Image (cartoon, rainbow, N blue to C red; front, side):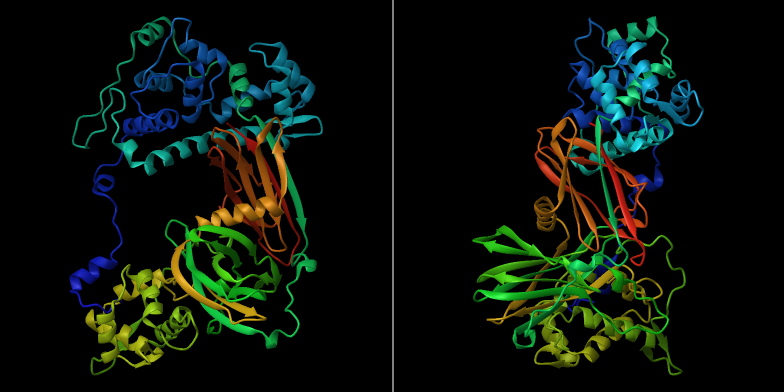
Amino acid sequence: MAISPRSDATFSNQKSTPSESPRTKKFPLTEEEIFYMNCRAAYLTVFKSSLENIISKDQLYLALQHAGRNPSQKTINKYWTPQTAKLNFDDFCIILRKEKPTSKAELLKSFKQLDVNDDGCILHTDLYKFLTKRGEKMTREEVNAIINLTDVNADGKFDYIKFCKLYMTTNEQCLKTTLEKLEVDSKMRRHQFGNHIEGSPERDPSPVPKPSPKIIRKTDQETFSNKGDTRSSLLSATRKFKTSVSFTITMGANGNRNSKLTEPNLIKDWQYMQSKGCFFLEEDGEIISHQYRMQIAQRSMVYLTIKPLNLSQVEGKPSPWLSVDTALYILKENESQANLQLVCFTELRNREVFGWTGELGPGIYWLIPSTTGCRLRKKINPVTDEAQLVYRDQTGKLFLTKEFKSTLSDIFEVIDLDGNGLLSLEEYNFFELRTSGEKCDEDAWAVCRDNFDTKRNELTRQGFMDLNLMEANDREGDPCDLWVTLHSMGYNKALELTEACPFVIDIYAEKCKPKIKAVHMEACSGQLEKAICKSVLSKGDAKVMDGYENIIVHTYSCDTWITSVIENKSDEKVIIHINNELSKNCVNNRGLNIFAVEVGPKSTMVCQHVMPLNERQEWIYYCIYSLIS
C-alpha cells in the first residue's frame, strides 16, 4: 500500500513472496545426495572443513554421534587400530555406510533379554551386573549415571521402553541439529567435501568415495554387520545420556492469587501516557513487535501495564489474540543504546493486564514487549473459505465489503499508535514496512494529503479506507495485494486475526509526565533474550547437572507461565534433551513434548516457556533435562 509512485509491475514484485528454488522444484535430492548431505553435516559439526582429518578416537566418536550413530568402544576399535594415524572424510562416509543406526526394535531386543518379569523394566541390580560384569564393562560411575536418569528410573527399576523412545528421539535431534547448522552456514555449502564435490543436478551421480588404503584392507579382512553385538548396542545407548535433572511445579487453577496486580493509591492524580503496538507471527514462527523508548524527567514512582488491545468484536467471531500473554521488559539506557541494563518486567497480573509498580530514576528507558509464543502460534488447520473483500454495483463501480471495512477499521486502530484517531507519517510507515517492506517519503505523503482525507497532516480513518479502495481500483478489483496486506497484519482468509496480537501500554508517573515513542519493529530476540535470561537467573530456581557443575538449569515461575533457561559455563557446546511428557494441562512455545537444544560455550539460552492449556484447571509442570554431550 505504499503511496510512493511506481509501476504496477514494481508494486507487484515488491509484494510477491519468494518461490521455491528451481533446484528444489526440478531436481529433488536423490538418496545418494541425502546420504552425502548427512555425512557433510555431521563432519562439519566437528571440523571446520572436510579437508581436515580425524586424528583421534574421540574425534571419530564425536563425528559418528552427530551422524546419529552411537558407537561402542568395540566399534571404534574396529576402525581405529593401533596402526591408524588418521582418517579422512571418505573413510568417514564408508564407516557410516557400514554402521547403520541402531533401530528401535534392535534396541528393545537388547534390553528385553534382561526383562525377567516381561513388564518393560529391568531391576537396577540386574542392570548393574550386566553392565559391569559381562562383555564391554562399564565403570561404577557410568552405571550410576544411568540409574540416576530421572525420567527412565523409578522404584529401583530401569524403564527401558521409555529409554528407547528417549534414545531414538535424541538420535533424530542430533541429525536435525547438524543439518540445520549446515543449512544456515552458507560457507559450508561452498566447501569441497573430500573427494565428493557438490555439483549441479545435470551432472552424473556422485562418484563412490575413495577410502584410504588402511580402510580398504580393513573391509577386505572383515565383514561388517549393521546388527553388531546386542550388548555393544546397549552399552552405546546407555552411554548416550550422561546425567539429568528434573523440575516439578504444581500450579493452581487461575494462577497464584498472591501475585495479583493492584493499582497504586491516588493514581488518578498521576500523569499518564499511552502507546499501542502489535506482536506479529512470522512464517518461520518467529515473533516480532514494536519496541519503545521511554523518557522519565525526574525520579518518580511509575506504574506500567501492558494488555491485549480490545478491538471491535463481531458477534460469533473468535478473538484469539485476547488470550495471548503479554509482558514488558524495562531496560535502562546507560551512555548508549548498546549498553542496556535490565530494571524489571511486568510479572504481576490482574486478568489480562500485566504490570509493574516501582521507582525509576531520571533517564532513557527501553520498553521491550514480550509474549511466550505458547498461544500466539501457527494454526494447524488453515481456513479454506476466502472472505470477499470488494464487490461491484450494477453500474460497475467498485466498493469495499462491510466485513473488509470492519477489518480495515480494526487495522487502523492497531497502527494508530498514539490513539489520537489519526495516522502520522511515522505511524503509517510502521504499517508500510510491515506490509510492503518499504517506507513512504515526504513527497509521497504530500500526494496522500492532496488526494485523501487528512487532518493536521495526518491521515483520517476515512482516508485510510479510501486509500485501500484506490488500491483495489488500481488492480481492477483483483484483491491479491489486499490479501498480502491482510496476511502481513495477521489475518487469515476468514478475516480472523489469528497470527498477531495487538496490545496497549499504559504508563503512569507520580511526579513527571512520561514520554514514550515507538522506535522500531524487531524480532523478539537479541536484547529481549538477554533480558529474559537475566531475569530468570536472578529470580528462578537453579539446579546443577550432577557431575557437571558448569551446566545449570534455571526455572522461573509466575502465576501465568514458567520459563526455563540453560546456562553453560563450560568451554564446550552441549546438547540438552528436554522431556515434558509427564506434564499435565500444559503447552510450551516449541509445540513439542520432547526436543533437544544446543547451548554454546560460555552462554545462556531460553529453553522453553510453558503455560496452562486451560487456566481454569490445575496444571503440573514436570520436565526432565538430560545432558547428551
